[in-house]
Image (cartoon, rainbow, N blue to C red; front, side, top):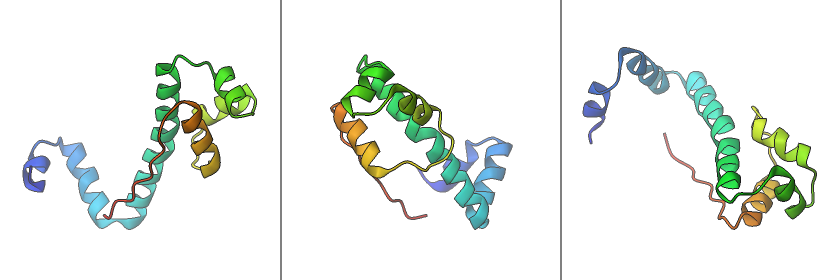
Length: 103
């Protein structure tokens, strides 16, 4: 699908955001950071729930305490240590991938 056809399917609000993402580097940086800060903890929580693990079980598997898992799942700032993300993924029998996309 071309960018033009994709843009035709967007609402006026979406078009405004798309335009700002293209032309405003500060807005783009904040937008993608906010997306990351929401999606990473949500993805880990969804996986933990699919694996039918409690926060306590995950915490024990990575040698930490349950409140640490709770804080991570509710976090709104991307200040996570890569090693902790890797340990949580491994404890849930998952692969951690980092994808870098050029804008």
